[in-house]
Amino acid sequence: MRELPLNAKISITRDGSPTLRLSHDGEEMHHSGGALSESFFIYDQALQEVLHRRWPVVVTSVGLGLGYNELIAIGRVRTHSNWKIVSYESQEWLRKGFVQALSGRETTIFTEVLQRVAARLEISARDLKAAAQRALKSGRLQLRGSFPGSLTPSRDCTCVFYDVFSKKTNAELWDEENLKLALTDLNSKYAVFATYAATGALNRTLRALGFRLLPKAGFCGKRQSTLAIRE
Image (tube, rainbow, N blue to C red; front, side):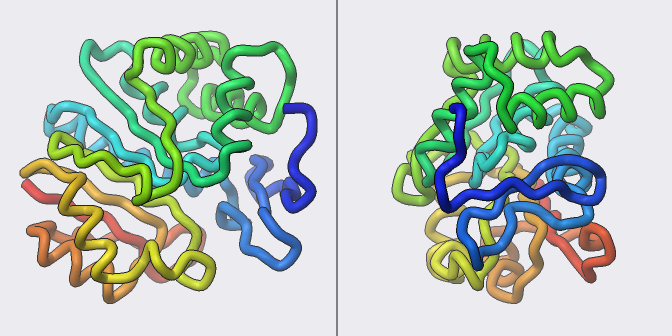
């Protein structure tokens, strides 16, 4: 992917990592305080909760974007014998760009993201890229279209990364009834849910589905984010 679409613009966040804005007046994919740092702060902790409990690692990632969360998860579990990540992304060019970055030699924004994730995990970019390539080939990493339109019910899912645009941009993905329907189809009897946001509708939905909300500050000065566990 040599060029971004006309409506996409790269921004560099405070920790030096890139994010995207998908329209002139749209919101950026990540907090200006640091795309990489936010991804680790919100989603890596959720994965660590799963690993700590020695649950099967079956991740549903809603919002591939630039692939931060997927690469963090692959980096963490690449040596495990049994894991799976299903990632949803409505923008086809983002899915294609991610795959091309893993299969080709061309330097893209996805390549930079991979290198930054690898550096934070203290592994080589080559090893992380190879692990992601193997995951795509074997089906351990699956890239699908929009959520919940492309959702296949998966009652074995133990970890949800809910990294979608805010209610202002994507109101339907934060609607209480839609959330309840989608999350009912996603979770096993034990699971972890994480997102950068905290809303009343989300809290009510998670409690109704048997989740326990854990105290979790927001990233970079935000008042609150969401981390919930069902055990």
